Length: 416
Image (tube, rainbow, N blue to C red):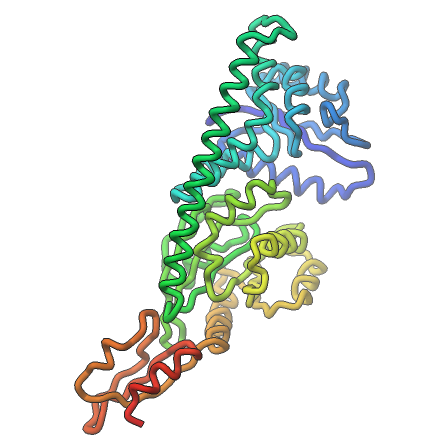
């Protein structure tokens, strides 16, 4: 799909906000850039009501076909979700391959995913997307080849064969994903006690999560000014000011109007992060739609059943120009927040302190006196942090960072 030029069609509703329309255009351009597709020409069609057959009006579709031909575009992209019926009719008029918003996002996921589960989930989403579109795509192919309209020969049989293949593949993928989910549930149960306290960075795509990850952990997570540059979850260890070792995960960014079938694909790439003890929303203040993007993140977390884990809001890129009204709304939403800029090193110390404060709510540093035989070291639970060890005549004096519900476990080994 590289080095292709596209005719971009965006839909404007009468009375809609021009600024919002501009932002949505910039967003789809960024998505296409991630796929190395260049926008050769853009048509902002105004549509009073959705045409059930072509979304846009038939005359608008003909106009788009003419412009696509004149500008020698390879593909037409429409920044909306279209049905199989609409795709069939539009492709027939345009005489060019057509991508809607869902297929653009699917293509990015297929390009950037690496983990086995993410690839399986996205393949399943793609198969479910393609299944109702088989007839339209075959019909258009038949027309281009001069096929007999209305005939029920080879074309019908190919559709049935392809549908059966997709149904079988969807069934296989579903079973494999269920198997992986059972394995993860078992592993999660086994490591539930005594794991390292973990944070996950979540938020709208391109909000600066990877930059914050690198600044806090010294990691080298990929940073690109592209949507969905990060797709698979990356996790690194980091040390807080009190000496505690915690985990920090960088996750795939959310996006407005995410197709529902892709919510599951998001879940598969986010599963490890959603198991974190606390979620940190990172929001880009520079975005003109910063508050709406934030609500997209919150609503997606609701769908994934993880909203209650949000403990902190990071208002990022404060060094850039930003909308004061949106920023006030973000600050007043109800989450504890910190204002940051990685580029200007603003707010990072405060952010680290906030992370430490969050761990204080669920963990505690305890002091114990253990026998001098050293057996205590074999009893330290995985994930608990030894802050200090001092050998004295009467005992080994230790300070250990543990989850509060594990304090009784350690008290039974103490000599006092």
